[in-house]
Length: 257
Image (cartoon, rainbow, N blue to C red; front, side, top):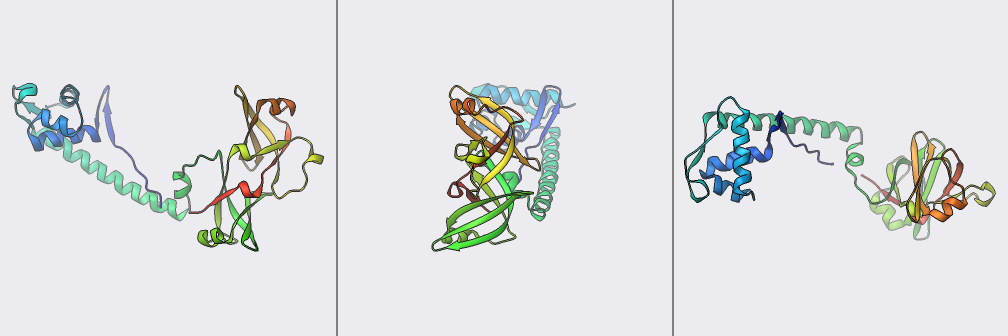
């Protein structure tokens, strides 16, 4: 399951109470010194002092008191108000953590947690449901329905098939680098290969030498292709143009939760 996380911050005008500032208060309370607290947290003395002063200014009573001594020494301690701030912050943080824990459960029930947390360098990540699996020697072909009427096929080893537990009815994510997507505007030149996807150009963004093309393929799903700018110009790619995307099955990576 993907772990959800959140950082609690209270704000009032330009001042704020954050986890980092509460940690500073706790370090001051434990060590009795702003200098020592700043060192523990990797802060300069000035940064620690400014943060503590901002907290003092934020509340109706000081959260910290310090005797003279500055960087060379002195004694610092939290006031009853300061300890109350620390306790209140942790109580709210505990409630937030409990809420996140419940949300993790809900996301898991809806099979969303992994998808929301996934990070990948592949420009295209399409969730779909496996419709068929066919084994040939040491290889396997997996068909994945990623949108109504849009099915793509990936090839992988039988060992990977077994390791991932891929079977019809299971959800999977198809990962495709944008550079692996080729485009053609002539249907006669795009034979009925396993991954021949019809779409319309949603956008084209040109760089110095490369163009990124976004295709609408169906049901709100998009496919991104990256190709040389000269090729995009030769194909006269523009928004609204009907086009076909071709992807080699071996260039599709499948991932599961």
